[in-house]
Amino acid sequence: MLVLLAFIIIFHITSAALLFIATIDNAWWVGEGFFADVWKVCVTFNDTNCTEIDEQFAYYPTMQAVQATMILSTILCCMAFLIFLLQLFRLKQGERFVLTSIIQLMSCLCVMIAASIYTDRRQDIHNRNPAVYSYTAEGTFGYSFILAWVAFAFTFISGLMYLILRKRK
Image (cartoon, one colour):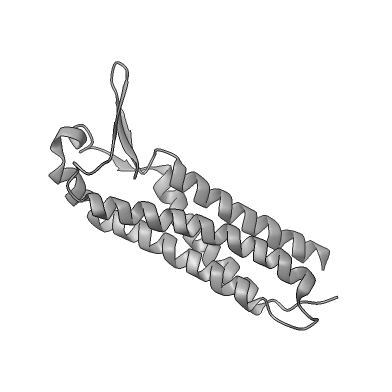
């Protein structure tokens, strides 16, 4: 039983770490000489020149939606972990971790929304902001973007695990 508990805790912490990295790190769209994410675009030919994504950008509300849902997903995942630890000591034997599951599945939904919006609108954002994204045409999705989708799968699986899991002695 302790092995299962340790696995669940490590799995949840891994999910949170993936969400933190995907949210913070600057690698949602990468290529030779540049890297971009939901916060800024950096060009690295002779030196690194970064441009913050702000109100002057076309589709700025779209980028804000991605930012907000990624932050919300990370916060919800951390809250679910704390609630799991609380429920671990407070639930009666045989009860399910439903509250933890609901919060973790909401985190899953938020990261899915963020990654889906970015997937759908990336081309429009790059085409409407040629001054900033002029060097990024030949890029590919970076590891932060991939980690966001992996975090989606991890949070979904852990949300289901919490729904199925019952407290035992």
